[in-house]
Image (cartoon, rainbow, N blue to C red; front, side):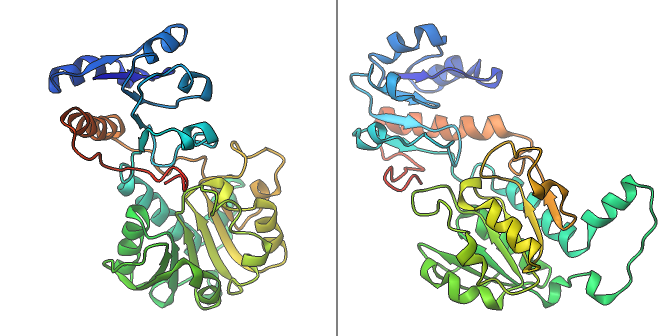
Length: 318
């Protein structure tokens, strides 16, 4: 069995070929340069990384592609890849704790008015606000999680510890610790008027692209908060900006964006009720070790003919 680590690869994978071949007897692992990639892929059984269409066309016996991320970048699932018989697996649940903690930090920052005070600090201005309306008590809030996968479930669990009433919507509703209820995704629009905090964790798929648009934002409860730590293309930023301009949202926190990086002239940069982080919710220690652990387990399963973990439905992109 031959596995190719498709370039470009970071230095963190430099030792992986030797480690994998030592751990999985019968597995050959190569990490070619871009110039040698096509030849290396010709007789590859498996691939790790992003596989462009021109390289896919060079393969003759490829059966498995391991994505480097839980939600690979736009264009990863192109038509030829979807039509190909190979299996795709991803890094699902690899960054769950990091993203959930980042989300909680965003929630606390918005509910305690920190974006405003950070701006005051930068201007050396002392402007305390003791009005009750300046803060958003979590113990009296209802949060709706859009997408109750590994990340969404952990966010809900953490919020429940703060006394938040947590509900969710998902394609496959199930019981989760901390959630009062989880409804089918079709119930999203009817549930929105009753919640104070909306958090999206959904991946970018053909069904979720642009799902948070002008029409859906009209269903949000006035003065609610919105946070997106899923994928940027799921939210129309201009529609979000218009909702803020109209006073239909109390505040917004975004880690992912429709175009990345967010253009410097976009009005969201300058809105005082908006908190922006540059797609770093998954940042944290042990990233390389966790990705290697998933790859190693799947290599062992692949060589022994067992079912792989984190298998993706290519038509749905997750």
